[in-house]
Structure formats: C-alpha cells, structure tokens
Length: 384
Image (cartoon, rainbow, N blue to C red; front, side, top):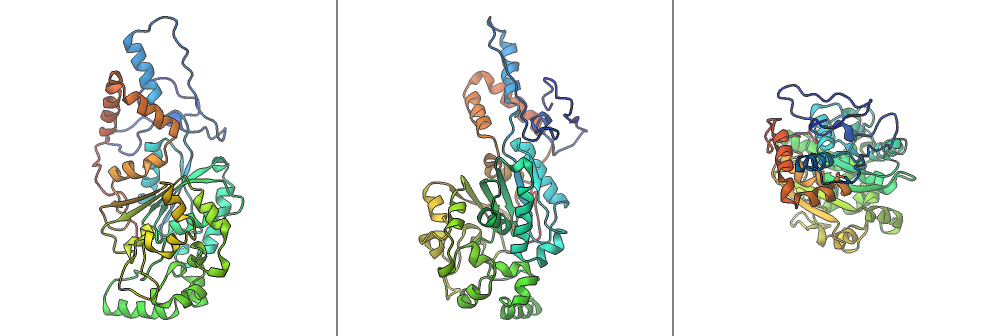
C-alpha cells in the first residue's frame, strides 16, 4: 500500500519504491484483480459501539481516502510516428492510471509507427473497434484519451464501432478534428514547399488516400468539392456529405458525458492549431479562421457538437506548450478529473471540507512530493 496501512490481497504486487522512483504513487490495491475481471476491492467499516479514540478515527478516514474503488478504465490512442511501447506514451499512461486510480491501456494498431502513417484510417478504426469489443475490462464502459491523430481513431470508435462498449468521456489532446491544411513533413524549406504542393495536387487520389493516413483528414478550404468527393475519412466522421449524413453517428457522439478538447498554444504541427477545438477556415478561403461555434458543423449540428456544448459537456482548454508537450500539472488539472471514479471524487470532496482531516491531505501531498519531479516539466513530446 502507498500509505502503509491495511493488507493487500494475495495477488496484489509489491509496490515498494526505490529511492528517486517517480512514477508510481497510487495504492496498487485499487486495481482490479487480473484473475477476476471487473472485481472491486471493497472495505466495510462497522460503526463502533463506543466512541473511538481520535487517532483511530483519523486512521480509518485516512484509509478510506486511498482510492480502493475501481474507476472506469481508459484507453490511450497514440499519434502518428509513435507506438505504445515508446517511453513517453508508457509514462503518460502509467501516470494517468496512478493519479486517477483507473486502469489504463494503450491500444496498438498494427506495428505502431509505420502503420500509423500508411494504414487507411477506416482500417485503423476497424482494428481498434475489434480490440475494444474483445476487452472484457471495457464491457461496462470506458474513457478514451486521444493523442493527435489518435483522436481520429477515437472518434471513429465512438461513431462507427457497431456493438462496442459505451464511451463515457473523450479527452482529446491536439486532435485534428476539423481537418488540417498542411502535412507537416519537413518544414518551410523550398524543397518542403515543393513537396507540400505535390501532395496537395494528389492528396485526394485513391493511391494517397489508401497509403497515407493523414490524407484522410486533409482539408483544403479552397478545394472543398474535391475534398468531399475524394477524402475518404473526415467527411464521413464529421457528417459533411449532405446526402449521406448519418443520424446514428450524431447520436453516438452526442451521447458522450464529457468532451475535453485540449489545444496547445505553441502548436505549429496542426495547421491551424484551432482544429483542436473544431475551429477551421471557411469554405473557399484561407483569409479568416472561424471558431468552432461559427462553423457549419456546429451551427447545423452535424455530429452533435452543438448539442454537447449547450449541455455544458464540452470543455475548451488551452495549455502552454508545443504539439503534445503537456506538463504533469496540466495532466492532473485537465485530464485526471475525467478519469476518476465519481463516487471517489465526491468522498474526497466531503472529507476535505472537514478541518479534522486536513492532515491527511498534507500527508498525501508529502508522499507525492517524495517523487521529486517538477509538476511543470513537459511529459510528452510526440512527433505528429
């Protein structure tokens, strides 16, 4: 146990920490037993027949504060050029799991980095759909944390995955939700500009659509007819094709309990960066940039974004950093609350209102600080 009280079940692994270990702080007993999927560890405290000593009551309340209940699990969908076994994604998943008390799983598609570039997005979505349907741990519902292109897969699971378990919250980091107007392959050198121009000429060809994943959400504002005709993924995901709008896609997306949209202030990979919030250029022009609420997707509510927003379920969050450079403090502030068990959060809120339990909070913070890491040090710096 992280606080050293009580006894772990027999299958609870040893969590003793070496000096300067930084990434595991939650009680390991909060996890579901791998032998019994969905099992929860429950502690029942009988009401004492006589007044217990203050120290005894404090110990009981301190023990109850440890996250022993099991939150909904979550999956992480990484971005392009990345893989689940890479250090940044692994640490990101482990930290979120530790802080939230929820079990996290990174879902790999194909071989990871190469297939993230070359496999069509519908095929990637189909693979992810089958994986989540076959995971018994997700059968009662789960949350999705998407990283960059991983958000396209995450939304594809929500909208297209028939018979999949319900998704409660989508936490999106730098997602190209409204499209991108440039593929950030090499920068602004003359050769890069030439390559970008060549890509634009053929971006909606069957060959590139079938062999270059980002082409599935490449949206040229001055070439909307070809985009709607040739782009094979985003027009369907965003319900943009007039005669093919699917009410089921909208219904599924609008069923989310929370949609958390995180934009990175110094993001130079997504063009425009406001696509993280569903903002984009108007059809026919690069001259202006529309916020999400002024786009047709929102005003005509093609996918239920307006419905979610008017219900207070969309969180537009702006953080300092370049593409996917998020600090631990921002992870705790903007991601963890949507992964935590709501009953646990309510219990923590009630106990923090009592001054007699403030020492517990101080003890917990002391243990967290023993890790000796900077809260503002960026964790992820993932290539798009």
